[in-house]
Length: 361
Ligand code: HEM
Image 1 (cartoon, rainbow, N blue to C red):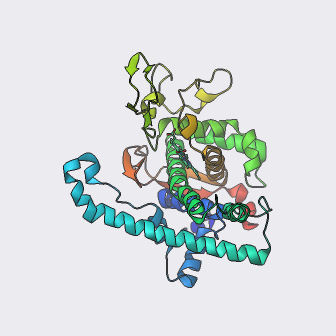
Image 2: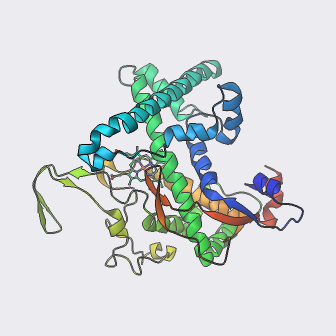
Image 3: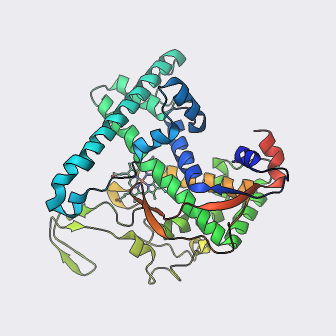
């Protein structure tokens, strides 16, 4: 971001520059997961892939995992299902084959680099997740088959990257519309960390207000308003309704998160509502990651990543809306999730006191 600002601004040092944050955050989300899997950071990988791997660009790579068109007519109008065979199914098979090739290539590369670097043990320092899985495969090849490892890698790309990017964008949009919260989060970072170094993961415990900003973003903006469908395994009663065994149950978390019986002024962005003893969060009224056995396995990773990225954005830059009017918060569909209808644009410039820190990076 700092380099982009340096490239985009002209002479005057204090100039604000416009940035489109949706694509920045998509790359950041993808980059984080790539690093966890042991691939070079994407911003560098863009050139690497083009140069060494047959001309694949970062954007194409991301499309492999988040196709824009995944709408199947037959899911909604079963009598038109035969059309899907020609349009959607064909595309999906091609997409899966492409993903498969990509992940197999990745596994091969990691196998080779593990042999040359001598990474042999699970939990070895610097080992990527894929290295750990490959080590487990050596110890238990019948369970950790290539198919299992490919499945884990695939779910990290598909479930992880889009959700992270999407929430980073919502969080920044909410902060731009609520400058008092932006200032409060920045003051908290400045007083706990100072301005001589960048925020790190271990600082997050000292930043409760930032954590509340993330929690409130997750309450207001659901990327999947309905949880994965459940099926009643026996006859039961829920909320006074008799449910027979085998009934499909859908949990609308958007409705729970906006329930006026649970939250004061539910439509208002109020990170303070999560504060201390008087927190409005109770029982099952906050469910951005679902609940029960099929709860999101990436919750811990997501909360830390969102805290770190949003915290870095707040710490490093000054932000302003592009015009006088509030950022448009209308919802559209992106990568099959509920995303901002209009990609977020904002004005930004590095904070003067941190320029010295950026120069050392
Ligand atoms: C802000 C970020 C995220 C949100 C809000 C989120 C939310 C969710 C939700 C609501 C579910 C369905 C849970 C249910 O039906 O009870 C889910 C499932 C899942 N998520 Fe996430 N997620 C996020 C990030 C991630 C990340 C970073 C990963 C992994 C890298 C991940 C991996 C998964 C997986 C594997 C499942 C399926 C779990 C299962 O069916 O057993 N998620 N997530």
